[in-house]
Image (tube, rainbow, N blue to C red; front, side, top):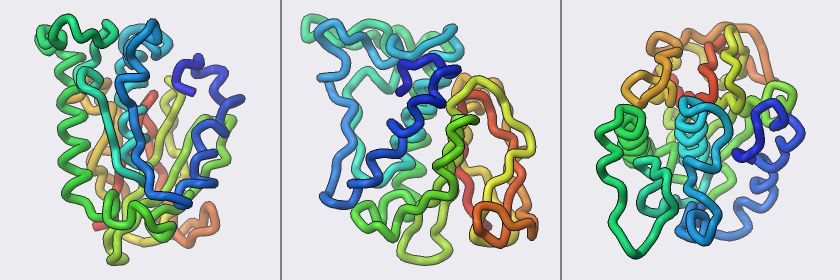
Length: 234
């Protein structure tokens, strides 16, 4: 899916959503393993379309969407710093890339994803239970936007993840939510510290009583280009 030019992604939307038809039939590990980055397949970063900023934004988005999914994660070494070269057993990783702010920002994004995954029960507690995952809207193929909820055992441990798979920013994008009140933006893959443009929601958004997606409340969000947002109700 990510190798497609964003203008064509609306025709491949089901590639993002299909796995949830069988996602809880077994206990899954979601791998981006060495098999993906050897034997002429190219590195993860080089699989991404677009200019340099789009390649990095796409890769941050891929990792964000991966961490939003149910199932344990596996990422092969080098992906977290955005290697340009395929992995090779003949030499070490290209650690010098971290002198570049885009590569360093990608590493910071992965570090923060891991911290948030560990700290937020919604992202890991019910990994093998259908009760831990719920689509908000998986049908916006025209906009290439997906929104979903991850849940922990406690009702307060609920997170909203919204992903924009195009380089087009979206203002006032409405997403239904289960709770009123303020939803804090915990993660934004487009934040400047991760190498992004800094577009976001100023730390969070207040839910309105406008019903959207069959839910009593909704948020009007700014979706950054090729960005993933993680929000949680205070």
